[in-house]
Image (cartoon, rainbow, N blue to C red):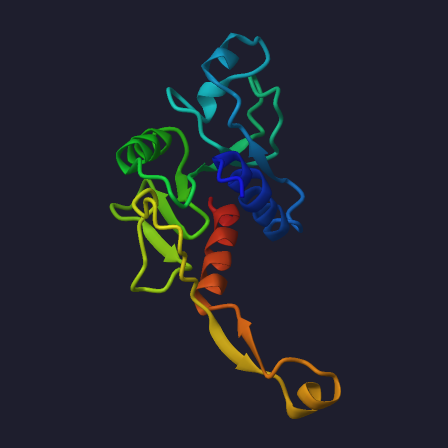
Length: 192
């Protein structure tokens, strides 16, 4: 009931990434959305190592430390720009992505439904969408359509589970694209 970007960013995306990277002790998923340009005035922090004019939402880094001014141990892997599913500012989002790619090797633009992976070495993004193909929309192009038509796979439980333990006959399983998306997200930390 609260469609603010910060809720998707910190209650969905950040939590998901922390779960995916749980076994990678040096990986940090950092909310940098309040580290505006005025952070450059701090003697111990260098914001320009991961941002310029625009302020990204989430940073994925190895050996992150807020005191990064003279810290060469930090490896900046990716920035994530989070939008709400009803956002309509595609032009601005693409300006942010373009700028972020001048600082870090990878950028993810997502509204939690569509995930666009940008790599500075590639001309086109890889796109993963958890929405049915008929309703599929790019990030910041879904607009006011509040009806999300999620991809689902149908599966079933055995007769024993249905009859003896009262499981439902059918369940909605994770679609293959979800597994592919998680694999892609995991590949971010393997970047040289």
